[in-house]
Amino acid sequence: MLSRLESTQAQYGGASKVIDSWLEERQEWLVRYCQLAGLPPFEKNAAALPNQTEVQAFCQVMMDYLSAGHFEIYDQIVSKCEVHGGESVELARSLTPKIAASTEIAVSFNDKYAEANGDDDYEPFDEDLSTLGQQMEERFEYEDKLIHTLYTKHTETA
Image 1 (cartoon, rainbow, N blue to C red):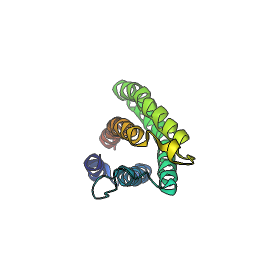
Image 2 (cartoon, rainbow, N blue to C red):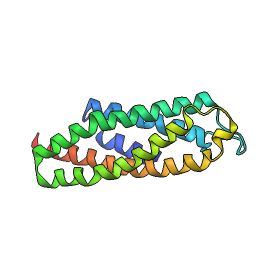
Image 3 (cartoon, helix red, strand yellow):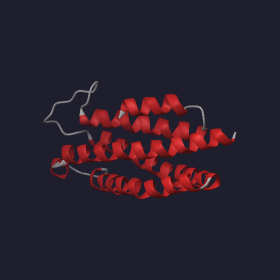
């Protein structure tokens, strides 16, 4: 996931302040995800449950990222795709439901863990975090396709 982000930032960084800001939020989410999951360079005791404050911060960053995508970025990308015609519009319309599926999983994760109050509430945490990570990785792939389309179509007309 981190290498995909670095590649996207290298390829499209500086093209749009909105996209740059959104990718920075993605990076913050990824760092926090790696911390919670205990992925390198963040190692954790496999039996230890995460700190509630860390989980809340992770969930807040995730919800901010999702909101920026749904309420700022996607509308902008879709409207620019509409300007450039059929192929771009079809891609945007085909990817939107796929992105929405990961939103449902992320919101469910947030609802379950952002206000959890003890070890019992964290019972399937690692499994749920893994599922979330897989869904978000797919989401990033779809989002990157939209960014690529916006970037290439916008560049072609500039």
